Amino acid sequence: MKLFKNKNFIFVVMLCLILGYSLIRPVNIDESYYISTAQNILEGRVLYTDFMFHQMPLSVYLFSIISDFDFWSLISGRLFSVILIFYSGFLLINVAKKKAGSNVVTLFMILFFINSFFIDWAILIRIYSLSVILLSAGIYFYDKYLNNNNQFSNLIFSLLSFVLLVYTKVTFIALYVIFIIFILTLKNNGKKVLFKTLLLSILYSVLPLLIFLLLFGRYLEEFYFNVFTINFITKENIDIAFIPGLIKFLTYFLLPQNLILLMIIVFSGIVYSKFEKFLLLNIISYLLISIFTRILPEYMVSISPIIILLACIRFSKFAVNINTKFSHVSVNRVFTLTIILYIFSVPFGIIHIKNIIEGHELMMNPLQLYSFEKQINGLNGNTVLSSWEGYSIFSEKQPLLKDQYGSAFIYKYVDERDIKKYKISRDNDYISLINERVPDIIIYDHNNSAHLDSMLNIINRNYKRKFSYKSVEVYSK
Image (cartoon, rainbow, N blue to C red; front, top):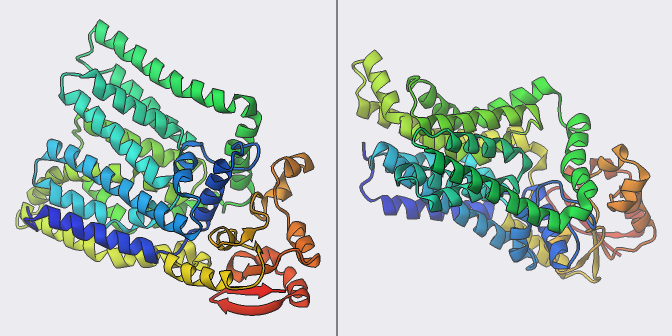
């Protein structure tokens, strides 16, 4: 079942391909949001109260390390994400090898590193790469705990990984609860082991909570508004209706490669080891949470490596079942056909991602953005007003409205107190600055600024159009 003998060669090739893709993958609109938030932290401002951020705090504190290098923050952030992805793959390869033998390593590397849905999102400067490494570490050390005479050092590392996962995104608390239940119900737990396990679980859950309360205890109202209220507003008023959203979610997430993975799992039989049940329950619970909270398919990126791991572990059973039903199809042929189908699904997956999901939101890739920013930096003036903050925070100019949330819809659903408190931007904020000729440079992206089209006449009266790129126009005084 080996397609290639040199697995290190495959690893290096995959690394080079993914690094190359990270340079041409169009910039996601939220990447500038994470970098801008991290810059605020470096400037000594308090998360959730001095500025808005709608996720748990861990990711943005880590990204603050690489967020103060203008355009190079984008490159270093993506490189950081790629490193986390590959280390996650290394951890899960070791788990797969233990559970299914060394023959599964090549299979895992192919399924993991050319999953277009997973790679397309995981390389971004968002929570995905961090959540993937924490979940992978939690599973890796959980497996070591099961297979190394219940060494508590492995339990501690696993427990800490799942706790930190919750501080990446609050919905991961479901995975943490599943982990605790499985740990406390192990058959070889004596009373002493059970007590020690329970004590460690409480200790390593309470300590991060105390640290969180120490940092944000005075701002719990602000924390709730940022992490819960904003997401509730978005789900109720902005996200598409449930049925269309579910169709979009399932087609985007499943087609085509993840459908192959789930078919391997489903048709591999119904007898599962406890470890496999642990993985399966994590997948199902997070899938249900994603569907019934905010139904965004990219949220499944965090759990995708676990689907790949379980598919690899179950693959031999799947191949045997196919061989039993269709005797002329050998196990090796099942392996070969699965890999061929999976690899040839890559182009379809990438086209599907770009055309169906991102569509009009496609932006410049990092190389194009670098050239664009050099042109902006060559213009006279120091202040920039941009309809997408990424064009300004990646440049050397001073961005206006950087501290504001920058989402056109939020101010419509909150009261005036919250608008002032959280510096939430409104259309009038942009129009006033333009009327008063405050910005030296204006960057207007037609694809992301339909709500601001009324500004164009004002811009044309007060500014001169200098150059354009795709849907983006640049004006200066």
